[in-house]
Length: 87
Image 1 (tube, rainbow, N blue to C red):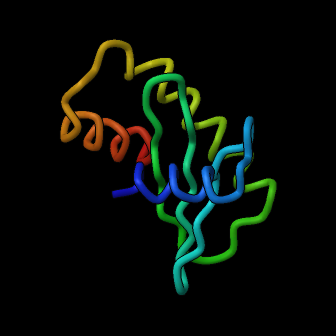
Image 2 (cartoon, rainbow, N blue to C red):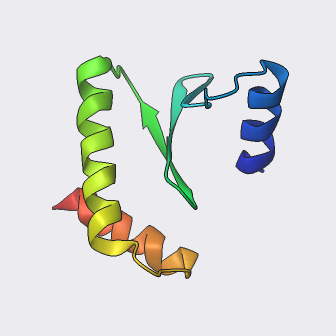
């Protein structure tokens, strides 16, 4: 579903090289980090300034480099991501 929303928004605004990075839904923000063959969505509640988003992006890049090589099992990835952020 997120893929459809992301594609729709990018097509609707004819962004070319732009991509959807943030969706605000009521009290939540959905941060979308795009990688070459997949993306990761993180739900945030509360304030998220540019500094926080920058740190989040750094953590997601670190996670991607450490754990996403060749992974296809979504449940395993979700568990690894949760454990990664707990540490």
